[in-house]
Length: 165
Image (cartoon, rainbow, N blue to C red; front, side, top):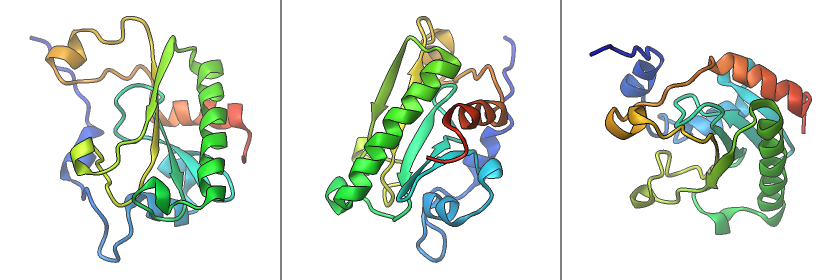
């Protein structure tokens, strides 16, 4: 059997999964950071931003997050909810133009039992999909094969979106 090495996963395995000591989620920390390239932020708007998932299900997996830490849709203001949807559409169009997927999985996981990994800070997932991308790796190996480095994907999407929303 051939081994597939994915050394970037160790950061997720060993790293904290929930809020830091101040109760801030990782998404709040990224929102307040100016290190967009290091954090894979691809676009910022007034009340939300788009960031590549550092531990993606598939290449080009983007998250749309509000700056404000809220856990559920009714907690968003109308402005935040609308802007997140507009940003989601823009990012989907950019992924389509840059990566040419055959389809998308787009959605939310609200609550731990629904699969939310960061329960305290809701975020939309945009996962591009290609015909045949559900090969033996995710099915038998619980492994995703990413054909491009996150930094390269982030740079391409940033360019497609422009420097700001």
